[in-house]
Length: 116
Image 1 (cartoon, helix red, strand yellow):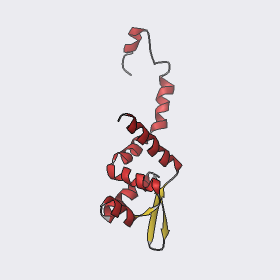
Image 2 (image 1 turned 180 degrees about the vertical axis):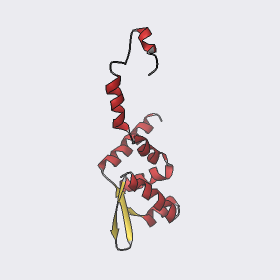
Image 3 (image 1 turned 90 degrees about the vertical axis):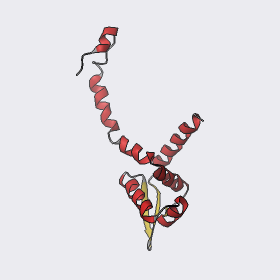
C-alpha cells in the first residue's frame, strides 16, 4: 500500500481500511448493471417495459429498430436479470424482471430531473 499521506494531516483511514476494502465486494458487478442502463436503446426498452409487457415486434416498432437489434439488447438485459420473458405460442413477451428494476428507473429519472 502507498505511504499514508493523510497521516501528515492527523487523519488516516488505515484502521478502517480492511472493512472499507471488504465493502468493495458488495459493489462487484454493479458496473455491468450501469453499463446496461447506459445504452440509450436499452434504457428505452426498460422504460417501455416499465409501462407494460411487450413482444419483440412491438418493441422494434416503437423503437424504429430491427427485430435482430432489439433481440440482441433483450438478450443482454436478460443476462443481467433486468427483464423476464414468457412465451405465448410463437410470440415471446418481455417485462421488467421485478420491482427493483422499476425502482432503479424511477430513482435515476428523479435524479436526472433534479438538475433540469
